Length: 491
Image (cartoon, rainbow, N blue to C red; front, side, top):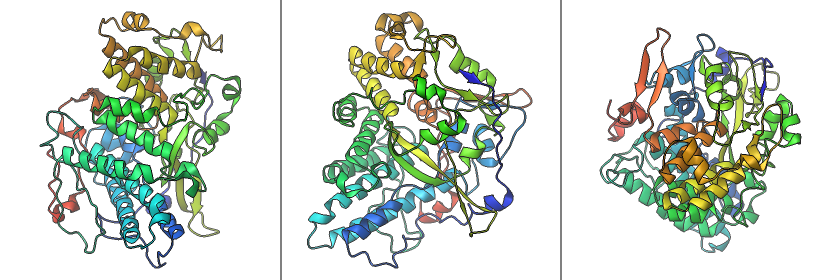
């Protein structure tokens, strides 16, 4: 459902952009340890910084096939350089370099917590925080290897360069590090996950959605094992995210009467609330994404909207999303900004967004894909039908859900014109995910995992194609890491 309502956006000014500068360089600064870490509670406070506090969405969304050239709009390198499949030399804002730095800063915080915990005599009270630190360390490394290395492959990951897996607190600035291999990084992630997950205790957290709870750790494990192509473990962990193994009660009810009655600001606030049952893990990041994604020059267009949300789909129905804006600002409201002024009366400051790291929808898709790869077609279809029941309506003129929208393997094979049951299920999952995660950057991860090509058009009509083997599909490491003995990615 399309609401052609113009939503004005306040663009980032020069003063606001300046607050993103002076980011920490690669592993050059440990967390602030001026307060002695002498209790489990203080370790818990330190671990609040063990999550990458940076936004990857801007550059992953801009690299994907969810964007096109509007011909006008706001232009900044974090949006334009990925669109043209070029390396972004920015070191701040929503750049790959800033995310790299933030991830290693989070790893440093996790390692510092683990170092303190290992020195405690009575370690029982510290165990839950050790669990969180290990899983947080695994997650930050997982995001780094996903963005800055080739995707996991059973054939090539034993030789493909990975990223440094850091397990000790840094005592020197810019020491010598090794990339080793993607397979090695995955082995280390799995080791930290297996050791950390059993130690997590949800009762230690005031706000569950801001920490690696048991559910969040399981959602992470489900994604990790899917990417590793260990489909049995992906299904296993996805099924433990919620107590009864079902996702239906936790999905965003986009086609409900209540949800469809929300106005723009209500939808925007609802999407990343901690009380929203669909959100499993949220991380706050300094970013202007929430105020800029609708008006970026390289973004979602009416042509893409027609292709993805209003054309025929396998259900035979319509997406229930309320889509706002005019030709140059089409968007689905998902990010409510929290603006922190530099001083009490200052006009400039830092905008923050809550980033949904893991959700019920993504975990459902991960389980559906893993089951499809295992040949468990009925289980995969059951999950997809639960998803359909929360997201589709019969038509814009009949805005309600009907069981006729449910899918079957025969319906999928007919729609995608293929007898390959596994492939038609994967096609359906990828199509649903593409719309579900519009403006969240998740499409990029499916593009690299499945070797999908991407085409972007330049203003002169030239078509840029990012093929499955193009080296630009792997984001470039920050140039300064060469001084640590790390080779950059090939170009």
